[in-house]
Image (cartoon, rainbow, N blue to C red):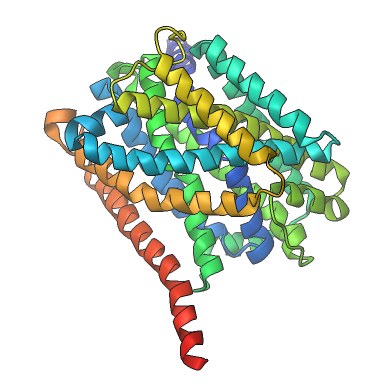
Length: 419
C-alpha cells in the first residue's frame, strides 16, 4: 500500500515538476556564469558564503510566486497592475525590460564565446541559435518547450565535473562557504550584489508565476509544487558553487584575470586539462541558449500580462500578436548588440546583474504586500519566517545598493580633497 502511494506521489510530482526546476536552472545563465567566474577568479573561495543567504532568499521568494500563482490563478504582472495601478506598473517594467534586453544580449554573448572555443564564429553560432530559439517558442507548445528546458537543466551538472578536475583545496572551500568574508570596496560589493542579483533575478518571479499558471497547477498539488521549487533552488546553488570553486582553484590560484565566461573556459585548459575546459564551455553554451529562450519569453509574459494582452506559448501568432512581437523584438535587439564589433560585453554582463539587484527590492516589496493581503490570498498569506526573510532581503539589497553607489563617489571626493 505504501509502495503504491509512493509511486502515485512520484507520478503526480513528475506531472507538476517543471516551473521550479526550469526557473532555478535558467538562473545559471551566461550572466550568472560570468559573475560566478569573476568572483571565483578575483576572490578565490572567499565569496562562496554569499550562496547560503542567496539560497534561502531564492527558496522563499520562489515559493511565494508558486503560492500566489496557484491560489489566485493570476500572473505577478496582473496582480501588480490590479493592486498598484498602470502608472507604477509602467515605470517598474520599463526598468525590467531594459535589464532583460541586456540579459538576453549576455546570453547570446555566452553562445558566441562558448562556440568560439570549439572554432565556430559568432557570426554563425549566434544567428543560428537565435533562429532555433525563435522556432522553439513560436512554433512549439508548452509541453515540448518544457521537456527541452528540463533536458538543458540536467546538462548544467557538467560544471560539477569541471570543478572536480580542477582539484580544489576542500579545506579552503569549506572555510569560504561557512565563514562570511567581505572587503569594503566597489569590486567586492558589486560582485556580492551581482551574485544575489543573478541568483534571485527580478524576471524569474514573473516567469515562475506565469509558468505555474500555464501548466495548470491546482491548490491540491501545492506541496509538490513547493518540492519542485526546492529542487530547482538546490540545483541553482550547486551549479553556482562548483563554477566558483573551479575558477578559484585554477584562475585565482594562478592570478589569471578574466573578462567574460569564455575566458574562464579557455584559462582552465592549462590548469585542469582540455576536458575540463570543454565541459565548462559546453555548460556555458547550454546555459546561454536555454536562457536566451526563457528571458525574452519571461519579458513578453509579464509585459503582456501587465497591460492586458494575450500571452502564452500555447497560443498562436494570431491569438497573441503582441506577445510574439515583443519576444521577437527582444531577440533581434540582443542579436544586433552582440554582433556589433567591440561591444563591451563584460560591462553589459556585470552591470545587468547589478541592475537586477537594484530592481529586485521593488519587485519583492510589491510581492510581500500582495502575498500578505487576505483579500488576495485568503488563508494562504505568508508566515512569520517568510516575512522576516522577505523584508530582510529588501532592506539588505537597498543597503548594498547604496554602498555600491556611494563607494566610487566617496573615493572621487577623497582624491579631490587630496588633489
